[in-house]
Length: 369
Image 1: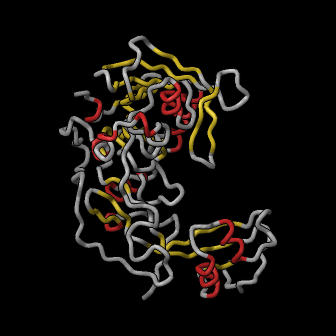
Image 2: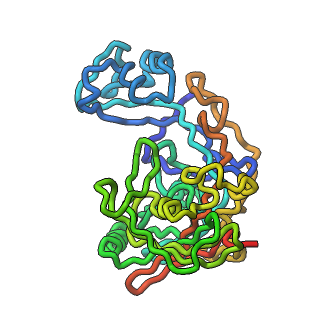
Image 3: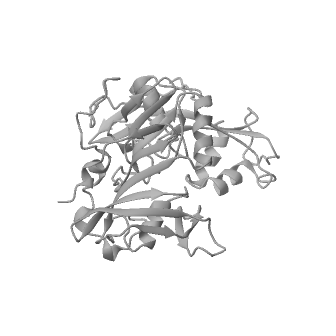
């Protein structure tokens, strides 16, 4: 079998995706990861470097990868005892398995000469990061609609759904960036939270301290030396006494700000397993929100700009090459990812700036029964 190695320059295509039981998988592919030796790596053997810094694979894998040339230094094969030097180029050629995401469409809302707005499904990251490359909003739009280049104007966490604005050129992206940095852009989200949220408007001023190692943030008192200043305004839209729908208007933009400030208020997002205690979770919601959190209520809004594929598709052609060295084969997903996750009950529905407003329909879960 002739192996075709991909790099970030290779665009995603429609045939790269496999759909199974409402989940979007990426057909595994061969990929060259490139890194340059950091000063703290220098002096280590090539095998020890990988075993210590990239712990997702066993030690024996890295020994074999070096021996057969799957790991190279400056484009050359080396021995397993080779000691790396600062700034050397290291290539790791591997069989890449991307994590699965929910198979809901990336719905195009508006297509303008300089701007594209979409409704981002929960579970899909915005742009390539970590293990995700093709299973991203940017990758899917390129594969399914040929839209490239795209410049995301703002962030949405992977598990958050809703409005995403993408500039279609760098100049327009820079205009948006300047407006956001100047505080001229107003952001609005809705969330479903635990309990009966206060009727009066609530403003939470609490520093956000993000722990990158744990992947979560904490709220600290305003005058604390920890974290960065953060402020969010909350307004109750409706409640049934058990849960509430809340309008969330972040004044600052910190990591997990809305999620942490809602927890700080005593009303965490009702299915946010990262920030909610098991005692307060209504277990009846577990497993019921994943596909609903990303699905919008107005199903007729399919946009006449582009024909959008069906939301949950099945693909019977799931053949892919099994790599004898791959630690994830013969599975489609990498180890640790079963595709069984929920989307957060947090949805971005409106961004407003100088002379412009973009909106996204509310999701189904925003209706309290």
